[in-house]
Image (cartoon, rainbow, N blue to C red; front, side, top):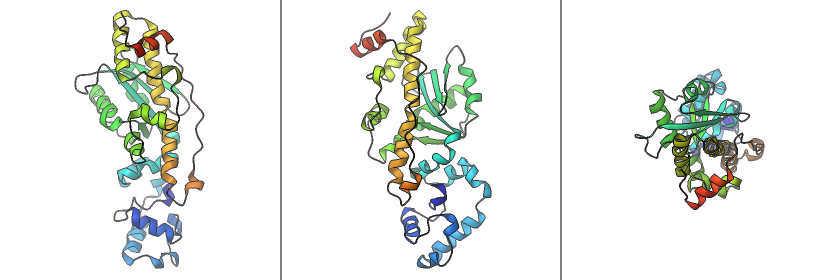
Length: 278
């Protein structure tokens, strides 16, 4: 709904934007007399002046809207740049950003899953990420991105849609797994496995080299990642429900993505029971 958006204009907040919509002005191209006569001269000046100066390339630039939209409204850019979006999640050796290292990374682009593993191909991640303009994470602003920037000595400049605050604004809290449950997503064979279990799996894999440990870790990492797309779609639809454009901008649920890794059932059962693996 980017062309329905006016809150990216400095001085225009949600209340004024709603007044613009109530005046029957639903797109930038409709912002002209006589529809604008019910708006204050100040609002008319702010919007007209901005739209005249707004780059023609704006609709091709997620960075433009990411920089100009209020942080609470950045979800609006998602569908327009969905084809240039990467869903991203990392696993680490611990919960401390400063003292941990990255063990695995999973990236999903809506069609394919890519994984990066410490000691194998982890160093390929920065070049791969460069092919996307938007990233979607859960709590990535607080954890994943700072970890990635520190471990790779890089700056992640993509527009970043963090689902934690986006969903919290809708009343959905309780971590990624909690939000998944509330919104009807099923982890199936990985239900009950959490981030601490991912640390255990990596430690045991480092000691034993058993591939079922790594495959189970990657299955968990990928599950975290591919579930971000349906969560982002649901969050977008719930946010636009409060606008006049809900029906026109509604997004269909994405087809469930296949996880290329299979979790070992005995390992998962052991993790649920708190057993320690040799």
